[in-house]
Length: 142
Image (tube, rainbow, N blue to C red; front, side, top):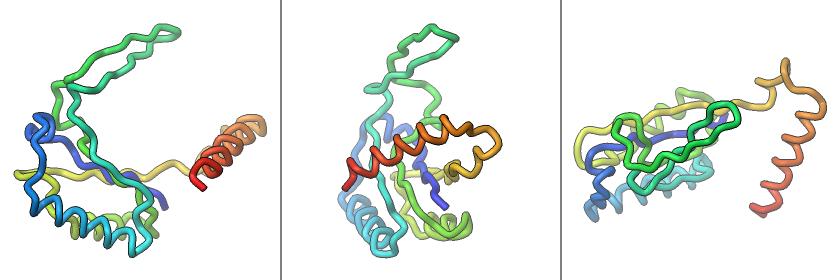
């Protein structure tokens, strides 16, 4: 089961305040544990939303919205992509994580859709298109 583990933004992360050296080191050690356990597939921190853009869709119209975005609690400051056996394993790993922020913080775990979830809606053409995209990504990563 693949999950995205999202570190929610805080006022400090949105202000661009960098972690203390101790936290930076603790998170590095945690990431090493995840890699050694074969859990971590990817992960990174995200810069504050003042450097971001959103694209709003309405039919064929597109509108660009410049950051910063005001709902800090709804923003993501960093993420991991993990491969775990189930949600319980993901929760257990998050509980081992150092607090990623200087003050109170929150981490959200969301499972990815897998192709079998789309069995009722995937046409052969749609499935083939997704397969080609997956093959292209795999080729780029090797």
